[in-house]
Image (cartoon, rainbow, N blue to C red; front, side, top):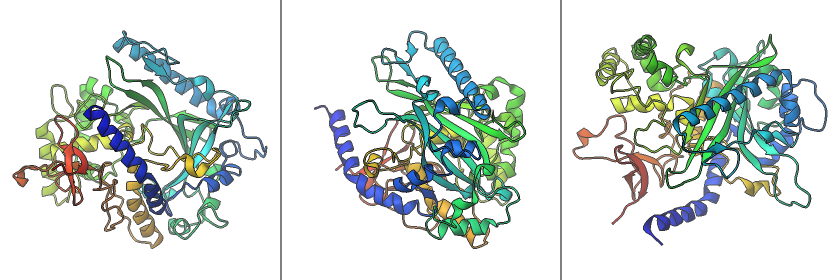
Length: 500
């Protein structure tokens, strides 16, 4: 066996042996901030949180609405139209840029397209795969106390005759985003946070009693639009399509909308006026500080209404990254001098920057502030929350880890904000880079693959120490591990056992 396959075999074995321990750790990390127990989700999906009951108030039928009927609803017709339009544009771009590589549904094509037939068929439905508390987003709308997200996975609901296998899940999630506090509700954010932290969230009198269809804000979809196996002309690649649809209560329909902080790179680079406007806006000290802390809300005029997130993406700069070309180089939005001067102005004005202390830090934040850039960071493929499969014959074993390292690494920060809200204290809504979670004074993540343990993201330290990038110099590894660069240019890498 050659060195590379041998290394991959060892890596796979180590990962498999670590999964039971990870599953136990994850259950502790998500306490109070997520619901991932298979039995609980099965019960909730059979009740008011079944997707069709959330979208069609008053529906009492015992049989779930299949997707053929779901997408026939007036409120969902616009979603189908927008997804179909994205497929048309994706294929047109493919034919224009990769004309020698075939694309279509099935294994006979170089790029294997997502088959939309099951998506709109009577044989599938969206099954509740997890519930996530995002009250850490209260800074977006204090009146709503943040968000609660119901995450559904596309799943075949009918087995073939004599088929004992579990119904296969398909590579698509639908995220129904709800306001944690409905309009006019007579309850404080502190009480909602207390209910989430106080015990079993799904119990009677718990936080789930506070939400129903009236809390709906939007739908977010994520699907694997195409997959290209490794071949003689390219490496393995999978593309994920991300979309957002806000609920228009007057029209009673979900409307295609700009995606939060999803910078429209192509449009910016093609429009000098828009480029200057975006540069001036983001480098303004107040906006730059919010950008550093991860709480920036970029105006919609600079945003895209859809995104393709290719995976895997390495650590070196690449046009697969959403910020590629925005910083430095001919026609870029930001020059090194622009960024350095803006950082100096912010610090001279008294700001204490937490993450962005260099040009490289600025570039990295441009990536992970976007939806697609965040999904490319420590995701499971292109998903941060694939969720559990409680429809399997043995649901406790079907999905050992329900979410990505990014998701679990962020639980400390999310719970810290919940505690502050519960106690009536001003929350710290800041967040670190997607690759390196904030500890918030906790030791729960120390030595884990989420922070500085085996497989964690790190920065290769050089000598003298003064030349190390100030945005990443504290990205070190736990004792016994060393940071090994994962690219040819970037010094960002992963923590592995020291080689003697």
